[in-house]
Image (tube, rainbow, N blue to C red; front, side):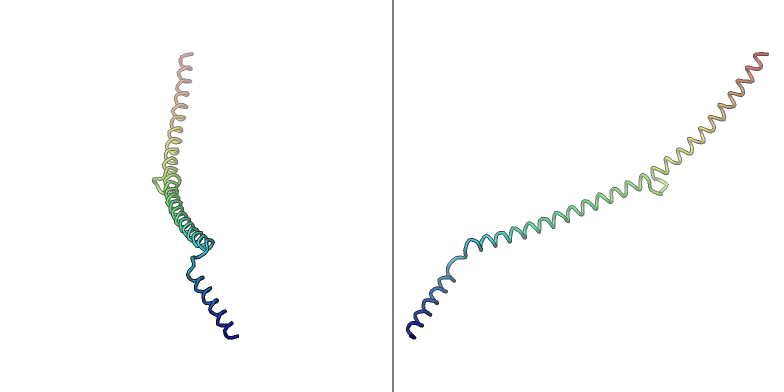
Length: 116
């Protein structure tokens, strides 16, 4: 009986040493490769999203500057400049209307004098 146990232990030792010396199965290699590819892909996506975030931030800053230049509250903004120009044009329009009314009255006086 002890001889049988010794044979089984010897066989078990040979099998364990064979398993330890044999190469890993193909599925384990593929698993390791796919895990590596997954990690690289996740890293690339994170880098890409970081780059996209900085691009969006830069574009947002440019749009804010453009918005301030067009409709901002500063004196140099386009809307304030247009407002000042509109005020001046309204003033000029009023002056032209007044001059036109005076010319009409002068024209009527001349017609009256000419018809006499």
